[in-house]
Amino acid sequence: MSTATTETVSDGRQGSKAGGDDTAPGRGLRRFVPARLRRSTPKSEQPAGSGRRRWPLFVGLAAILAVFAGLGYVVFVSPLLGVKSVSVTGAPDELTSKVKAAVNMADGTPLARIDLDAVAAEVEAVPEVFAVEVARGWPNALNIDVTPRVPVAVTSANGQFWLLDRTGDPYLAVAAPPAGMTLVQLVAPGTGDAATLAAVTVVQALTPELRSQVTELSARTAFDVELTLTDGKKVLWGEATQSAEKMQVLPALLAAKDGRNYDITDPTLVSVR
Image (cartoon, rainbow, N blue to C red; front, side, top):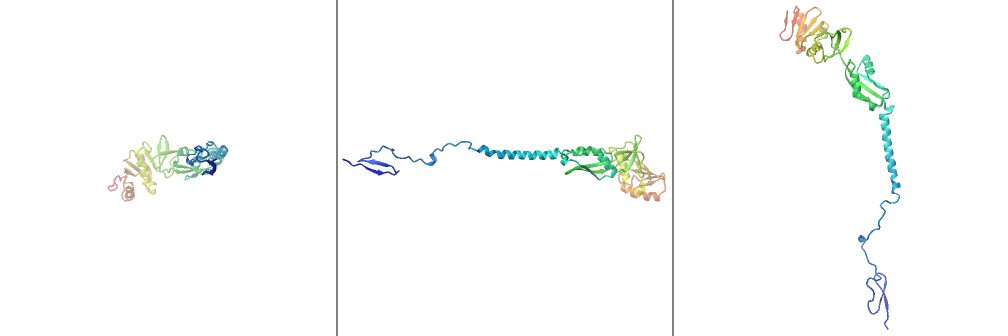
């Protein structure tokens, strides 16, 4: 009678041996599978609770949008940053009043919504204004810097007297020539008229002393500017070129030569008749 014995195999399981190997192949043994080849158990695509973790993001975005909406309301709609004062600089009191009256601006109008170009156009429509700059003065002011026109002469046209500035622009009608202002006779006063430009150039070249002796300046063209003095003497000035040199020689010529007509069209070759 044969005796059966048992032995422990490498994987910890027991197998029988009776004179031979009668164990079935693979029976009682565990197969080893590398970890890289094991198939992981599928997980849910959306872990439980992920929806609950998103709500702070939505709240944060809503808060940011609310802040921007509030800022937009304050800046563009509410009167909190609106106009409470209009500041005018560079102009005398009378002109300042005219400028403020020309600005069609309701109190509380948001500064951010003000069309600065439109305000500048309203101010430039005031005849005495030569140039203007408009700026916002946060938080509640509108700043207007004005350059007034300076009259250099007066002319007559269409039955009225008009002040002329240095550009030859007849910008303001007046009832009578202001005291001390040179009266200029022109055919067609205006900034585009060469005779007008020549006349105002000569007027500005005159010294205050000589200007006080001029009763009238005429310029039919830009080449024949003529002065009429208080004593009836006439000075043929000619063109506006070399006006500084002409002004230098004229006082001495008037004092040295007695005559009625003084020709200084060429300051280096003058004549008296």
